[in-house]
Image (cartoon, rainbow, N blue to C red):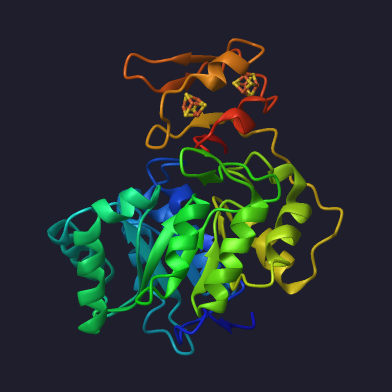
Length: 323
Ligand code: SF4
Ligand code: SF4
């Protein structure tokens, strides 16, 4: 797969990458062997860019996939991006150190401030950002930046001279895009991405399928993000070998343009880490399949849910997933 430079970072990535979240304990919860098999298979098929995070607890899958490949003749080490929800300097230092230890890497390719919500959130995490700057100055991390669902934060990133990377959420239906306290649009996010690109930042995107809710429109979704002129790579969550093959076929242009994946086995699920407990999904569900748990987050009764998909667009924070 032909690589391209991620902005002006000097880091070369493949045009599509594997999001490792899906194999981990917050989603498919695969065994170490099964999860590492998919990660390794993606490496073998030519995917050279992987996204993970401290919070995903998926480093072990990557480490296991690399264990047998690292020293193999002709193996090219993939670029691995990670991120942390940390706010303080110390917590971020520990997150960076944890990745170095678990993946046995002296120098990390990319480490980001994970899921920055709105401008004050960035200010509140100044300690963590200062730590990333220090890590970069010491040569421990090659490139730093921000991951976000928010257009205003993406705009902020374009103005940060020390940031190298933006990892924004964008998809053809604007699912999960936010602006301040409200809903954002793909047009606004695309404009913010363009400003980051002009400022020399590398851009790779997340949630092309809106958390799985748009997977049925596979080609349309990937065409939309791939055609954005300032996007260097598209990160896609992959949970089995078939999904790896589909993505590689899309990237090399051999996929059937009428391809529609079978999503009949997938279920609607709530990402409890993202759910803000607004209750909008429960109100909109025509089948009364969503209820609010005592903890204040939404939950799905799979015995009643018809996977009609009405709830997902109603969620302001993309906490409703289909996988
Ligand atoms: S997919 Fe449809 S039935 Fe299932 S929880 Fe959402 S709105 Fe309700
Ligand atoms: S709409 Fe989203 S944030 Fe609101 S309760 Fe449902 S899942 Fe949670």
